[in-house]
Image (tube, rainbow, N blue to C red; front, side, top):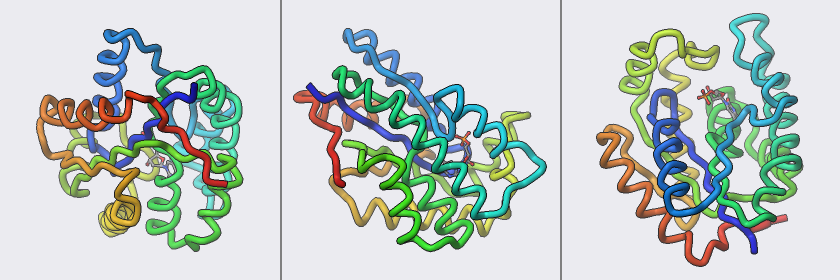
Length: 215
Ligand code: TMP
């Protein structure tokens, strides 16, 4: 039986990581064995790539940056996400293909159709059954990150206009695929968000048929 694949997307400081932890705890309490993972990262190889991508220097150019993201994704999907879904598990992934479209597409200005093709190559068409978009204004998100001292990465340091473009692209992506996306207002309290997250996930858990292939 295929599992359920849920991706978590949003700008910096949107609170998605907190919600992943809470959702995983709730799923475990119900007897599920969720796989919690993240991008870039989630495997030894992809975590090494993450280190290269998020370190302050040397900074990769836009094309090198996206190719490293795609390489990390390919490793995570083939070695970890696909086997977990095949075993019927719920997979919670902190960022996935939409991050590339928002950050490297809108943020860096790389061509969308090329990114869509590379995403498809890296994932072999594996699309989440549900994508939770934590929509947050860059002003609030970056202020939250600044308060959480020491958590800023190289992309957090991009100017606010970059983060505005990322947010706008995320909202366009959500509008284009209303069945896959649920947009959440990340300015809500963690408790309110947890309730909204659970409502969206519970709907798709029974029957858990969330992983679909769109090759
Ligand atoms: P975070 O997961 O802690 O937010 O850090 C990951 C950073 O990597 C974040 O700034 C978004 C960025 N990113 C991309 O630019 N493109 C991608 O495809 C992915 C997965 C992440």
